[in-house]
Image (cartoon, rainbow, N blue to C red; front, side):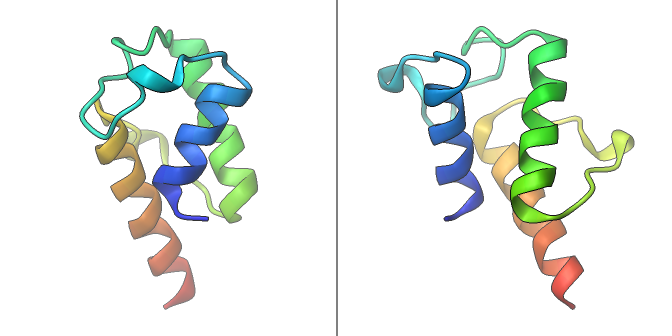
Amino acid sequence: MTPYAFLAETLAEKYDVARDVISPEATLAELGLDSLTIVELLFDVEDEFDIEVPEERATFETLAEAAALVEELVQAKGA
């Protein structure tokens, strides 16, 4: 599963975000995510992809930016 697909599915299933508002351009605020929920989502991502998201790198605003960061970290881990 791609990082974006995982994020979209997790947001819909675990955090009850309506699927029709989930898009790459959607900001986390537009999706109704507060800072605690974002931290929980990052834990979900770390567990799913067996990566660690450094706190200083967790500064994304959109789902596309979050997915790109996860993809970068996954690739770096495999290198």
